[in-house]
Length: 352
Ligand SMILES: [Zn+2]
Ligand SMILES: [Zn+2]
Image (tube, rainbow, N blue to C red; front, side, top):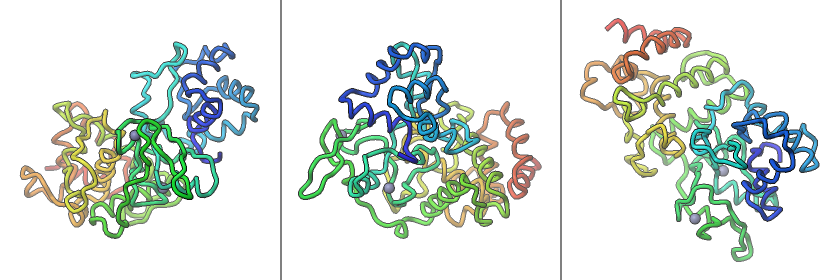
């Protein structure tokens, strides 16, 4: 299906043949020895040509149709770290036939799945759901994207479609609970910081398809400049702090948006937990704080007694304080390429 992830398509192929994806892949490795020479294969991103060829022959499809699903094609020029891949990272390795073959985190919007049933489509996962900055479904903005079953908390719930009254519903294969049983309010009832954060998510998503961002964020810049800036900030905010315990984003206040809307639990943003949407939400909120600087304090609560008197240096004064000293130079070097409002902020922090 167009817009589907390669791993989602292969899940469907496996299910149609009554096997698991891992079994399907072992079968492929046995049949096509030439794919053995490729190691560390991510099915969804930058898959090797030998793999595409083998899959095309095996599934009797044109190579171009498989190639089209590849995230490196769908979002050209975007590094793998734009996508949620904590679960399948090569180091923790899922192994198939002794080779490291893995795929991106199994992330889904339960309401889109229901819609797919109503539209008579096969249940599948959309490519954009794996974008790391996207914490809520772009179609259903009030619905967090999830990677686990809310009832049994198992990851990769591998759905089954079961009848429910006159209709059908998508259920978790492990515990049989419907995946969408968590209705929430509409986005205009969300707190201002949460609305702002979700607004940033849609701006980033649109910038990936070439649409220039609202000048509200950092003035008039083109889509690519904006996307690269956001990418720099994500990498920075996901870095471990001086103690090597928390991510830098945690130092910009973690609880400020869920006081009115209990979105989840006080998830701590260690780099390993970045798969959880609530951790990623904190990360996107921190990007918003960096982009807006002092203006962000109109939306987010100002925290941290040690920064009293430094409102005009928020949030980079805090980031410089928490970032290991030997990383300062790299941050300054990058920042000098950022749009003026941000580069100026960094210079002001350095002057104090
Ligand atoms: Zn949705
Ligand atoms: Zn379950």
